[in-house]
Amino acid sequence: MSRTNVPPLNDAEWKRALCGLALCLEPGGALRRTWPLLGGLSAHMTVLEIARPGEADLRAVLRIPSQPLLARHPGAAGDEFRTVQALFRTGVRVPEPLLLDESRTLLPVPYLVLDYVEGKPDCDPPDRHAYERQRAEQLARIHTVDTSEPELATLRRRGHAFASGLRDRTVDPTSRLDESRIIETLQPFWAAKSRNIPVLLHGDLWPGNLLWTDGTVAAVLDWEDASLGEPLADLAICRLDSLLIFGRQAMETFTDRYLSLSQVNTEQLPYWDLCAALRAAPSIGDWAAAFPLFDRPDITEERLRAALEEFTEAALGRIDPRTAG
Picture 1 (cartoon, one colour):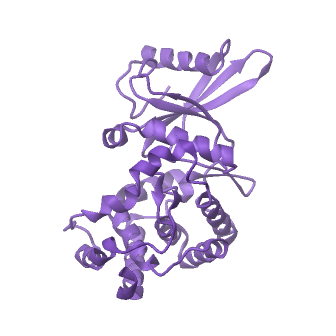
Picture 2 (tube, helix red, strand yellow):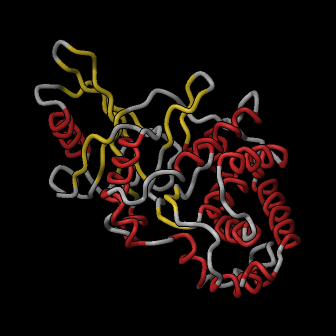
Picture 3 (cartoon, rainbow, N blue to C red):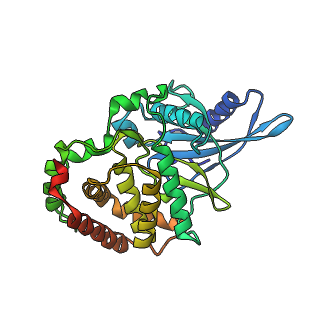
């Protein structure tokens, strides 16, 4: 029973905790087996298969936020659970939320449990343009969620986590990007008034956070970065992901499909593209190391860095200082 990134528990304690969790989810049930889900950097995930008398087995996903995430945001499990609650009720394709436990009784950390959804991420689809159109449709749907939903109250208080985390960014002298130029370009932008109303942001809608079944999106996962804010922030992050993984034409397909479904003002998109580039720069090495898990060993660190530089230069070339006012 894997427990990578979970606070220290011996094998017997871990098994006892999972058996107790199985009983919480299904009184009278019995834990049949467990297995880890790979690929997540922000959370440990374990699937529990629970035998139910007279019914089909229940499968659920135990999701434990990583220690670095909990250090930054102790309420991460609760915020993610309540966000998924709101989304599930409004029909967004997310797993059904089953349980939130912040008591630290069964486990020494807060955690949430979601229904198990059949499917898997696809980072090498046969038709990249059809794939990107569906991904854009999911983002557009997320951006229409009613942000007055009571479960999103905490996100309303937190505000735009993405932007606030970049404003005080210091230059990384080891980066191949000209970060000084990016940061200087962004200075007048921080005081600019948005042209768009705040929406619910996923924060990291890259292909690894989508489950696919038979060529259709089955679920959108990993809502720990959710916040409320500028829709162009999500759009810029997704555009960069498309370029890094699938290439420029796929990025354009994603952008065009999203804009066909949305009424957003894109005047400030080049600035948000620069924000997305700054966000990505420190993580490129980690991202490259993760791609073999998604059957894309061709995506190397060198390839990602070259694409990031291309994306940054394109954004700098489209900057219109008048849109920062």
